[in-house]
Image 1 (cartoon, helix red, strand yellow):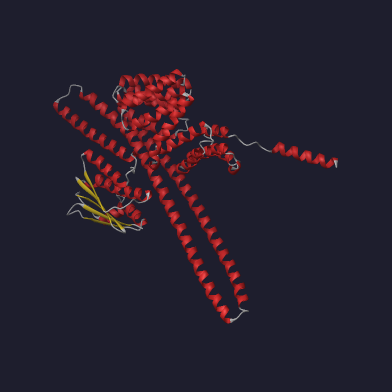
Image 2: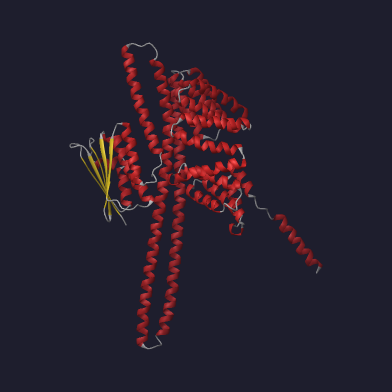
Length: 587
């Protein structure tokens, strides 16, 4: 008896020794701040959500949402944060604040959620005031600053940054000051106040050097190099970019290293070091291609994994259906054998009854499979649209940050040259170049804003098309008219977004290839058909050749076919102009 008690005590001690305590939710947040997403997911999976209190459930869902956000699953992350908000009365204030913060980030990048951002910002501002937390107050103001910066209201953007600067200086928030002062210098640059830009960039660089953070320092030195280049201090610009290149060599931020290669190529050109500049241009292109290939490989692997998972689920469903049918056949055979012992009339009656049941089961199974296929198609469409939105935002960012900055720098250089004494012929050539550059800058900015703007307004896709036409008309290069009639009710959000993107792509083709001055979008709704006609007065083309070699028409045709619609093109080079007709069934 004593030996048994000793053995039980020993087993209990060993179990306690080898058992591991669960990682706290706050420790998981620390892991996520360090970028340890996989480790945080593993720790979170140790919890049983159903056994948690409502307070702990909110913390669990917050970590789950952040992990999904880090995994680029924005829609799933947003849903997790919404569940956190449903537990608001039980959750800690910080949990609600963090959930709102991530929802604001998603709302600023996913157009379907953009209307939620203002109310979320207001709620977090109230929490910041209630807790009297300076960092939260800065975050609150920063959200308003971001909105005004996108709208190019630089004076108001500057005002918000000065407010954040006062709060950060009062509370000795060095990390926040590092970002705020960089913002102030950049806004001054956009306004052409270069003395103020130099002051804040130099001040910011000194602050960055104190942090000993190589990434921060390299970013600021790169900014200083581009500013010196814009002010035609090419020697100093080369010194700065050389230092930035050395510091960025061991950084994991591959995008910054690629940017520095491109900037150094431009600066070498300005210093008339053309051989070295050519080498750096090629290095930039090679590095950029490597990054694109890596991203494409990652996306293909993810799609392959999703495809294989879907295939396995479908195979399991088929096996279950086959097993179910096998069981039904066995029961049916037993039933028929039993009924064979009865009278012939009773046998026939039950035979027909069984046949009806089988037909009903088969019909139900077919409907179930059809629904599964439709759900999978809708999921694929939603995933594709989300991918397109992400890519368009990236393109808009590249246009605004990279090409827009380069054009601005070139424009500043030309304006400085114009102030010098030149002969009439040189001044005429320079004026013409300046005019062309301004037109190019306006087109890039218009395209950037068009790509980066929210796709569908609250009034639906027709209103969004009118907004698109209005922006294009303001450029003066193309007059676009939107005409609609017979539209009743509204379509699903995915369908409206799909149609908007198709028409936007057609208008983009007209602007890039048709050399047209006028274009019209006619949308007519009937009982079962939606008719869309896009026309222009451009130079025309051979549809057979274009559908084979480019302009995206083949992809648009496939999109329309996916919606069970029809797509026709009427154009020729001799008569000019083009008419594209699309019919979509309204089911």
